[in-house]
Amino acid sequence: MIFDSLKNHALYHALCPRFERAFDYILSTDLAALAAGRHAIDGDDIFVNVIECDLKKPADAKLEIHDEYIDIQVVVSGLESFGWSERADVRLPLGDFDAGKDIRFFDDAPQTYYTLKPGQFTIFMPDDAHAPMVGEGRVKKLIVKVRR
Image (cartoon, rainbow, N blue to C red; front, side):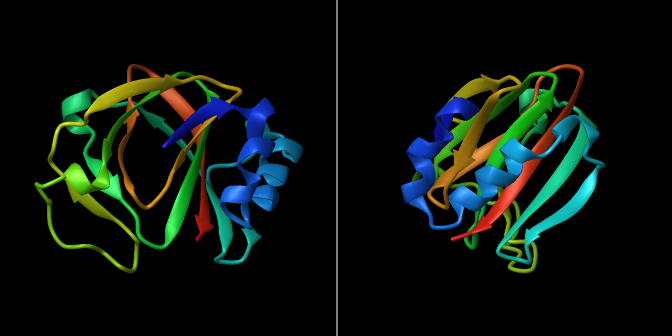
């Protein structure tokens, strides 16, 4: 898991060959004007899901994992908290892995929580389990999906 300010994005480009293009999109797009839904950046290798939704209580936000994609999550408006645990530590699956959606949920309690505000981002690698959309009120956010 990585948690940082967008101004430091270049520090992470070496982690994945597609990160530079993903961050270029984030930094060159009017995120406030971006409509909800899926937007292609580089076909199925890099795309963004724009979400506007009400946030959840921690108990209602389940940990999730991904195998094929890395998440870069960016808050556009509001404050969003995330639960986090190492994938190796989650033990209570809520169903099988859905390969079509690249996701599996878990009922474990996160090891820790942290809060993201506009101008910051978080990256979840396949070794991370994360519980997004925790907090009060509404949030507009980007989930940039980057094939590893």
